[in-house]
Image 1 (cartoon, rainbow, N blue to C red):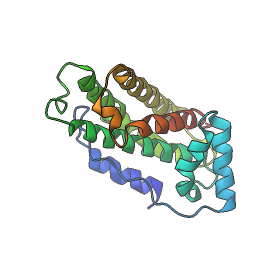
Image 2 (image 1 turned 120 degrees about the vertical axis):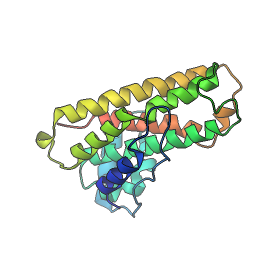
Image 3 (image 1 turned 90 degrees about the horizontal axis):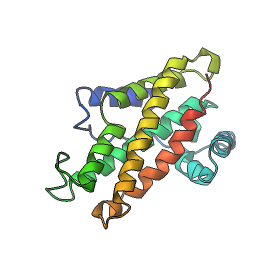
Length: 203
């Protein structure tokens, strides 16, 4: 499924949800074997935008490299989609740990993490960012893109980084079952991949 069509479908599904309730985690775009040219383009993006996580960037995004077609915004769109998918999957895992942790209104570091993850990947800011990423990736010609779309995406990403990092700091001094969840550690890595790639989009 094309990335733009996938995101349009995801936005339709998530419409009507607010920050206190996430939609089901979306599926990432379809995977396909990457040509040498597609792999080389991705390698350049990862090496140019990331330092310590360049190889992780390459490994995570290589299954989708054939769809990028030399378009840096498409790379960012897929990286952001993977990040959002993992945040939402982890949020559902957090809610399922036990009855107390399913209530984000409760005090405590773990309840705070549920709220942090809702802000990071649910609601209107996320929907607007995905819409803007779709518009940015529509063309590979940077000068044909609108800076306002990049501003919307960057604002969302910066806020998401704040709240995911805030959750991580909350749990740093606790023996929390959250840190043992299947997707928890991969959320931070995907965020560290998506953030720099988004910031490097050219307009």
